[in-house]
Image 1 (cartoon, rainbow, N blue to C red):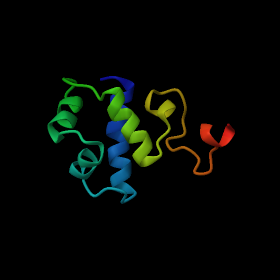
Image 2 (image 1 turned 45 degrees about the vertical axis):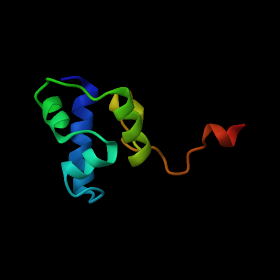
Image 3 (image 1 turned 45 degrees about the horizontal axis):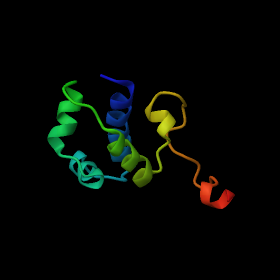
Length: 87
């Protein structure tokens, strides 16, 4: 399994623990993916797409660099500057 897939599976458990979602089904509905896809990812038969990762990052304020194993911070700082604010 890819690091990104493992981290997203871990994220689902973390979001449940934080009560941001109540189930994997909720997560799947939020990112518009079938539950079977997550099941296949867990088995190593499928992978989360770039579109899934983009949606996850936007909906849950997740640090994309964490998903790919580059940084340790799971979530982005809530007051981070955006590119629109810089222009």
